Length: 432
Image (cartoon, rainbow, N blue to C red; front, top):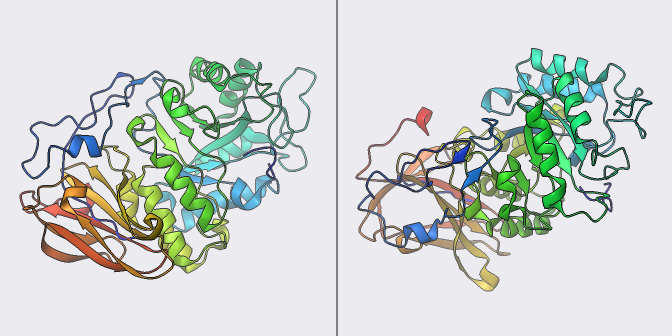
């Protein structure tokens, strides 16, 4: 967050397999054991991952994008330990935890406005009277993980003490509390470049001996995809999201620019999910969730999951869409074709493990329209025959599509599919 702020149909095709390492030089994501005959020579260019390279965290995390919940989008500063405990309870009672939503992340406003006499951060005694250690113990007892927030500046965005020049002491404190995740913001940064401010906390976290996920929230101002792969497990590529169609679509486009830089160990972060907060309709939220899943974005729920509607739960709990996001190949899907007025009829796509492919037909137009994904735009040979599975209807909708695939898509909706070339044996859902 910034201090100025209170602060689809998807097809999946079987494609190339790869292996990666979380530290040191990684194996190229699209390196194959023999390129399948059904892909074109343009395939590696369309799904370029050449900028994915050196990772230095050595913390073994982020093999797939992080999943969980964050307090800011719904609660802002109106948080307390009861809300955090009840949210942890709700992750279990709703079954979301079993689907992978395991991080319970406290955002800004958890601390007092001043450090104590020993120059340490102190939880606000009015809202977190039991302290963060006790809260972490509560969350851990449920099999979940606790995240906390600080800032690579003199103050947080809500003018609590920041961690700039206090990295070692604060990292040790977080580790002593049992924290599993740090969101590190960018306010009151004294004009120091992010590439100089963020690495010290990486080193401090590593020095604690505790495995802590490091999430950089630099707002994309200094193009963190160019350098943050050596610093954090994920990095914000954009300004803060808000709960509107205009914000969500703009952020999706901005994040798409950096697709070649992401992969296991380090992910582009277009900010948290707004699904369920009321500013968009069902189709728009379904598009939001589908595109975030395809882009291998973190899936951090931003609504009050204690009081979800049936529609919100349906979106957030779609196992087949989540499986796209958590696919072990780890290639970020991207926009591959646009048509229509202002490019509002869009095809987004990306390869998955097991020689599969995911494609989203996204209608950003004001009226329903037919969107076509051609095999050429997907990097497939035109003669390739594929079966098509709809991930929102949870059923197979075509057995032998050739050359192209079309669907009528409502305004602001998207359709999501898995495409399986006939030359590939279909995997069971548990392997997707």
